[in-house]
Image 1 (cartoon, rainbow, N blue to C red):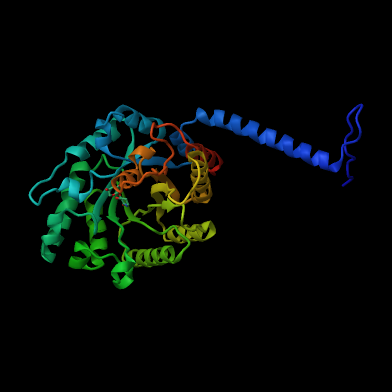
Image 2: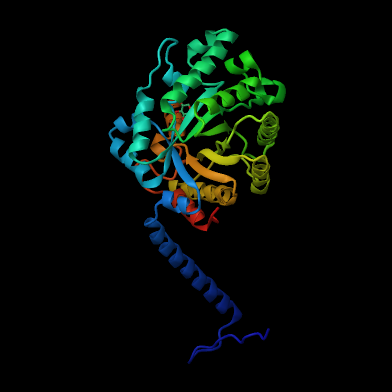
Length: 381
Ligand code: XIL
């Protein structure tokens, strides 16, 4: 190709190479600043849920009904109406909430949540039916046979009541727990102790019977990091899924919680390879509890928000581009409602975490714009 001579401006000396480069850089900066601003203005009009839906994705967030009773309750509910097409119960479908005592079922909060989802045309994920953690204290006093009865009774009573209104059930949460040193790196707890690994297959088979229409999900934590812990979780989960598949256990989707941390390493090609392996087994993938714990980011709030937005972009761009990924769920939507914020307050920490797309006043943060940009660029499935 013929090289072009540097342009010369009338009445001036020809521009030096350095001047041209500087000029080009300045022009490029002006252009990106301009197009960023234009893009931002454009994105301001966008609804995240609609952008996601255009690409065949459901955008969702966990929801806690008691937040509606706070002084900011109206803004809280409105943030969901404005931003998401689905909600996950953060608390009220957990056994401790539904069964505070051995002889009582409390449906109040779950009914309220279900009504909110229905009134606003949102898909509802019920989280979670069977989990070896966070159980009401009385469950730990049951004998093995009673645990089996409890599991069956629990699935029946909850699923019968809410079927038709629940879109997806997190049937089993966090089956992996390498620290318990059990075969397959499974997590210990009352259900495992009573039935061994078989509790998982038994729960899913019963769940399919009680609600044949809803999606049945196995949800797991800690699979995302590129360190040894992430590798153990990924390997153990894949091995478990292969065993469940071989037994024809009815599972529709695998939930990956994706609580990211600013002080952990991520290797996206490796993680995408893991998504490929889940997809190859025939499962859909749901990102179920996304947030970014920004404890390790230093500097001003603006600098931290930029760093969080960057991790959103780096992680979500390849993940949402994966055809098996159908859902992105945040763990709450606004920083003030995050479990990380409540945790930091409990510990008396001075610096509050900023893990979510909206700030304490339900206003959009750089992470919100990062997500909107990622969604715009995501190929449709
Ligand atoms: C958390 C809630 O956010 C907290 O409010 C509660 O105190 C404890 O549970 N993985 C899960 C979720 O599957 O159920 C957890 O939710 C967060 C980690």
